[in-house]
Image (cartoon, rainbow, N blue to C red; front, side, top):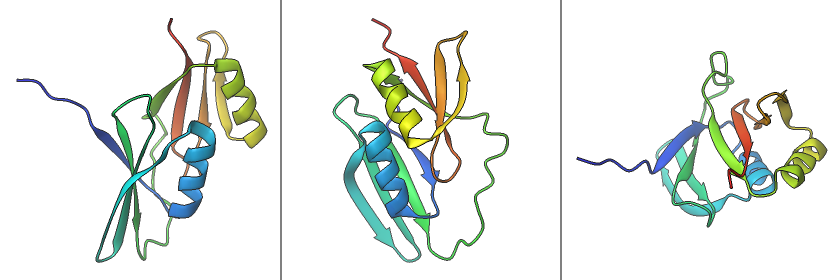
Length: 121
């Protein structure tokens, strides 16, 4: 039996702010949207992979989400690592760099960490 990973969910406080961040920082655009009683879900992705990030905004959720110790993360491979680093530095969203490993992390508006790795060609 095989299973294909299709998406990961992040709950967000401000959907518009998150959508703007993910589009600017990672080129992810809305592919579809679901709304229901008390929630809005937006799936974002790009042409590089079939995998989607699901952003969920729950109405009436006033407190910040508890992200633990930020030990979990989603990783993105950058085709042009230097250009990506320059963009993220300009955006002020780099939260941790590991020069020894050649990677860094950016933080989204809700505090989720996203790993940026160079192309493995």
